[in-house]
Image 1 (tube, protein in one colour):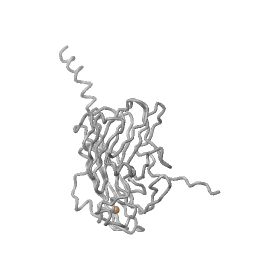
Image 2: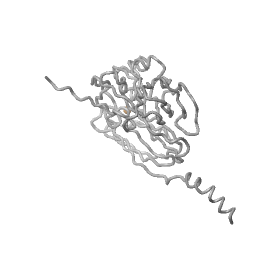
Image 3: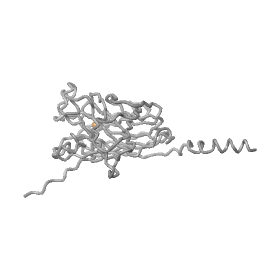
Length: 312
Ligand SMILES: [Cu+2]
């Protein structure tokens, strides 16, 4: 009797901790919106194609095992066909990811079976242009066992992409002639020394988790924290794919990874693609560690609204 009690005592709490929460069903609806968005701190606008009017599109967040009931609306006022491809899904491409014309909708359902950080994007032809113009985003599939990895104190989503000044120059997209490489749809969006630039906040000692997606359409990212070392990198954001003490990790176009860094002390830690043609043309996000850092959303400053200067 005492032995049984002892076994229950030892096993009980672990069993409880690993009991997965009941799977949920999420209704996710997105609208393809062809509109101008702000792409730098000066307020320059760009004729984007978007999900829900923002670049990147909204972050979708579910738990491993959950069902996603998805609906894409292509409003009648649009000019182009659009589509949606979720990398977190394992479903038929032809049926579900086909492009729909303006005035049409499409619906499909999938189960997010694998935990991680996944890309989503429009796949309407020419796909290179639909991605370059802003039709992409991130879906986080949290592991059903929250103890599969260390708890994060702070979380951000960063989506890297190439920016082409002329949204109609598809040949430049094929020729890799990008003008900028950007995070979360803005040139130096999180660079406090640039006009209109912000930052990513953290407190010293916090475990900062960055869900990183490379939308491309073409360039690889060499994601590196200047002044720090990634404590852990998780390929595709799956807690099983754990690396330790990584300086730079390559994320290809259409891929994603989760990066943990415990910022040792107060100061500035620029997160960059160490492919310098990209970093020096826009892909620098400064992680600013300060004891009085405030809570922040997953994707700060998205959409990037510039307050017009008062006229004199
Ligand atoms: Cu599209």
